Length: 271
Length: 230
Image (cartoon, rainbow over all chains, first blue to last red; front, side, top):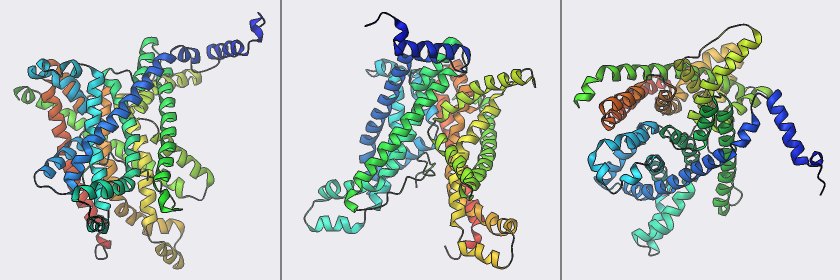
């Protein structure tokens, strides 16, 4: 080990970067690097929110989608109304309704849920889960409707019960059919979670906003957040495409139809 | 309920801002969408690359993130440019303009796919027939493409419009006084935020419902020629 730090490549690099940052770069990279923990925390928050909301939404959506696909009286109308309301209104307003709105009621403030509903993080999770459930219901319902009747009849003919046919034949087949749409929904949910920053959660965008506010900057925080989102979505898209190919492998060499960009799951209305 | 009634004027005013912003954003989005579709469909390699880059980048940035970047970053950039060139002293982007541009850019990317799909739905034989009777490129566009493009585009355009309308809610974060902004401030003043946000949800549902009616009418109107076959 030499004591001469000049030969340490890492130190050299940092010196060069600092110099570049201070003199010619439009962005203060050193400041961003110094605040890496803020962004790391933001990434963890965003990813946790997306993953949990997606799965809670899924757990809520599957039974409701079955209710709707089976056209159960009354229950299916209620599901339709739920979908209509949560897909037809902005996620931002839903988040505000839960975070700012619920505190209006004394019953809520006195309830056992208050320690959670008081926390912006839990409110964000609640809002994203419900919103995602509404979108996922339509996706799964579409998938279930697309399963050919013959498949169900064949399953019943070889002795599956109604529920057994649903569990072992219809749902797996529907899942493969609606997977591209589901993939789109995960990407839009990731976009949507940026709204958490408006109710003071430090997610990726929240980290960017905090950095900008603390140092009175215009670029650093937002550009860093943007770049992080772009990387995450790039990785997620790759991952989803690979999963889709895996799901379709039994079909032999089938060209995977890329999820159309027009397929906004934010799409207005229940079909 | 009384609070809601007391604030009805402001809520209406905010709703009007929301609708105006959505319509302005739609105009920018359609313009960018046509430009993007033209780029993607053109034979030029550079045009395709530019259009693909545009749609890919937009789809990988959350709308709120882009809005804040354009509003705060764009403001600084504009003034740095002014300082560097000496062309202007100080310019301020107002929230309405920032909102319109952001919404236009985001939905322009989705409209690109809308118009590309619509163009590709026009049967190829029609262009061949047009060429055969001696129409120029401009003539083909004016007499064959343009009249049919809207008809084919409407279903997807309608979906984009519904999402666009909801996205306008984000402008309240940069301080534009839309319906959400008024609801937030009225909720704070009266201490009845739930009531006001619920009202805003109803307002959005009514707007969605009205949009549905208009879209259904437009779809009938612009697909009259195809009616018999469909």
